[in-house]
Each structure stands twice: as structure tokens, then as C-alpha cells.
Length: 96
Image (cartoon, rainbow, N blue to C red; front, side, top):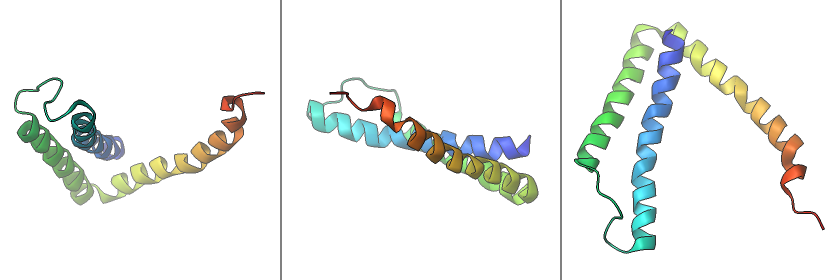
């Protein structure tokens, strides 16, 4: 299960990091005031990102072979992504 944990927490941390970019983009569109407030937002989000990366670092340190397997499985999906993206590009173009 360690190969799954490391990759999962990489993406959990990246997803939480995206919140900062989305809130900045929303602030540009809506003005200076945020549309909604989240209690403890910058601090709790930063703590979650730090905790996620600590889990990843700990998993790499304690189970390097399993972590490498998980990352290899993740990167194995990249060629499949480009294959399906190229194959399905035609159906999204407008006709006419």
C-alpha cells in the first residue's frame, strides 16, 4: 500500500496548493473581497500541504522501493494520456 500512499499524498498536496491560485484568480475577477471565507484558510491550507509533503518524504525515506514503484505506475499513465488525447481530439472540434 505504500506505493499508493506516496502518489496519493503527492496529489493531495498539489490539489491543496491549487486553492491558492484559484483564490487569487477569483480575487482578480471579483475585486479585493473574496466571495466566501474559509475559517483559518491560509494557515490550515499551508499546514495540510506541509503535512502531505511530510507523508510523501517519510514514505520515500522508509519505503523507497515501494515509492519508486508507485511513481513508475503514475508515469506509466502519461503515454496513455497522450494516446487518448490525440485519438479523441477530433470529436471535440466544432463541425462546419
